[in-house]
Image (cartoon, rainbow, N blue to C red; front, top):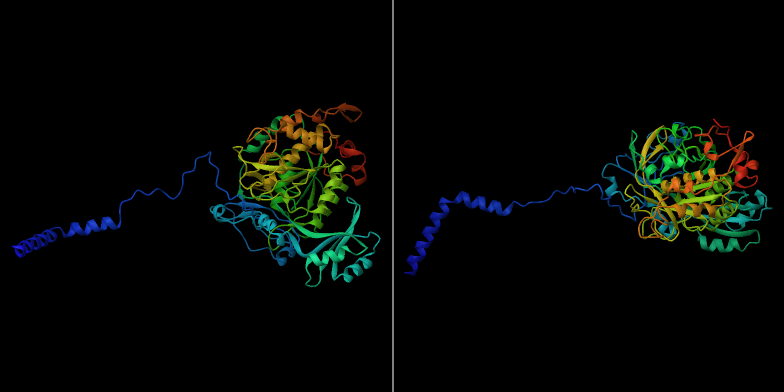
Length: 543
């Protein structure tokens, strides 16, 4: 019976599978390739949701700058091609490096549409976090006896196994400063100790690196709405002041002084590097955020710019050094700068701090980018210097720029994300970074000083912070400082000072809308007697 039942079952099963063979194969296929509802891998992002940015990734800088000195820029730019580094042959041929000006590398990346997500950028700021990379290897900056001749300075260097690269007297700090290179394999620490012990040496420090603070650049044409103008209430502020005849030193990469946005805005130019490189996107963009007045509108369209090139290309991207930055500060102070814009960052630097302290004591307002190294970064300088107004960056929705530094040293915030700015060759570009928020604030200060040129730096800071629009937690915080700058409120809070002109009294707000001349004022006149003297010596005829 058992055998018969088993045989019957086997026969039935055989007949069943013979009839349904096709259905069985189909069922297996369904199991192997289940019909699952899988969501798209391309997320749908709401307009109020900001892109995710790695806050510790610093910008890639546009290395359209020269040699081993520096002119870089920090910007990450979608839709922007990258090119091989500009060779010395390219630079010396007289044609520059066509189409390479907007390539970003140390603080201002560039790439295709997806570059923003995959670019590791931030090499410049990441570099500053590594102690061994915060200074130029094998170089020292020292204050030496000012009575030494060049031959004696060379002999001093040889005695300590050094070579003198440059030296000179810096009136700003009333000292002779030399740049030296170690000629053997001794450590910088050991050589510094030995060199500092010499009676002809007053102080010794590393030659620190600085990198520019922009993050993001994309070639663009047209005139998109400048949201920063509305955020800062610039149109209302310009009804009261436009920065006429206020001198702002821009220590940066080379500025395209021929750009239509900067017509008649350049008071003078100085190359602290002595390089042959052409203009650069970062410096031109910073100057444009301050003084643009053609298709775009800067925060101080009638301000006058001292274009000081202090940043150039280097193997790791655009950068500058302690020695070059001090040289730039020295020039700015000697040529009548009332405001100094420093859209760069580096480690704490005793020599540069010394220059900043003297400049601030002379009444020069110092402004710097807070930095693009993110929330976990230690304080970056010169922004963290107590005499400097440090500016963080916000976007169109008043959110903090993800890569912006935080800290108790942040004074206030300003727009710095997706800013439409001029770049060389009459072009325009979208860029982001605390570089540009600092530039907007420098221009805003020019509006204040036009109303009252006699204000001291601390008084200017107080006006800015008291009139800022609070963001984030109520009251001051480490992200936005006192809040987002409000140009109209700040200018309105500044009592205008009557200005004597052509035998009559007029208000500063009645002066011309754009600079009338690009003549550089003589240093003697510029330094005459405080801000009022600077304003009078440099006043152009009313249009």
